[in-house]
Length: 169
Ligand code: 5GP
Ligand code: MG
Image 1 (spheres, protein in one colour):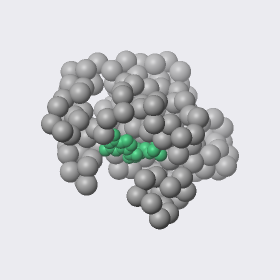
Image 2: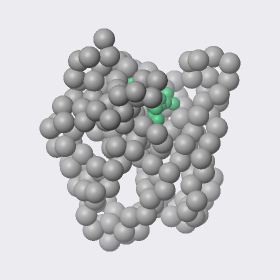
Image 3: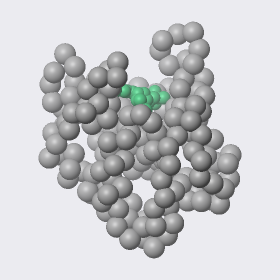
Image 4: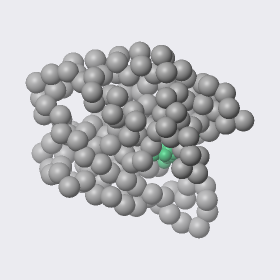
């Protein structure tokens, strides 16, 4: 296992992202939708650094389905947030933007529920892997096409608890 992003690098980056988001939403109400499971560690750090924002948070989970193990392109919302989305400013928080299929479906779903605005914040971005055009509004680190674990991200449900991001070798 090789460490790609250290705990210190993560801490500095997450603080910087939180400052940017706090400036944008200062004194406003913001509904944060955390994409399970992978985003839970990132979201916990990010939300605790938001300052002067009236935050509510809820969870959403999507899964791709179909015959192949590679992302099939069909995405189903598995866990629906219980808080009202209509009329709200929504920030979707996810661990990693890869093909873009999941997050673009989640964003479409949020917009269909009548959100007033919807932005996307991801900890990692692998732009080379994109199958649908998608740009997040806030990106922590852009990384090359490696499969990474740690800081919430798993391989067969293992490694989520690492405080750093690593590449399995
Ligand atoms: P996509 O953008 O392809 O629809 O899906 C992104 C999701 O796939 C992420 O939220 C994450 O759950 C998973 N994923 C993509 N790349 C990686 C990776 O390198 N490591 C891990 N653990 N999960 C990944
Ligand atoms: Mg995910």
